[in-house]
Amino acid sequence: MTKNIGKPCAGKPHARFDEGRLVSGTSSLLYLWLPVVMRVNNKTRVYTVMTPRAKKAEIRMARGAGNIGAPINGNLWRIGNPTRGPIKAGDIVLKGEDIANLEAMKMENAILAPMDGQISEVCVKLNETVQEGQLLFVIDKAPAGQEANRAAGSIVM
Image (tube, rainbow, N blue to C red; front, top):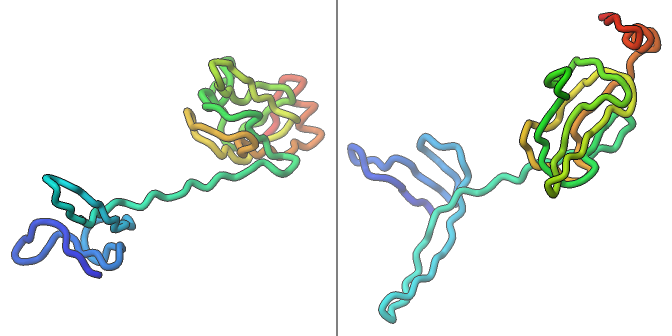
């Protein structure tokens, strides 16, 4: 089924849809055609309504040794800590350092680094709602020499 949508401009519609997929026009979304039944003044009419199809968000779960997952469902309201600032990929963290804060049921839950290492990937965004076990960070274990120098206060790159 092909449908033309929009006011004709020079005899052509603004967008043309074929089986819910945009064939020509400016948008790149997929659309569903849903029937809507309306009863007005004891007359029943069926209309076809076009709605955009929602994309399912991919959720990665923490599975490996260097993966840090969310302990509970909640809202990630800070990535980093107040003394250090925001954490991004490439930063070096110490075991027990505050790397994020998760708010759930009006309680703040600190997420701590499980080992010394370097953040290789930040998998979530600030103020994102996360599920229990969802992957937040990936940490690569730091070399032994780097851990000792970092603990002594000097940074080796």
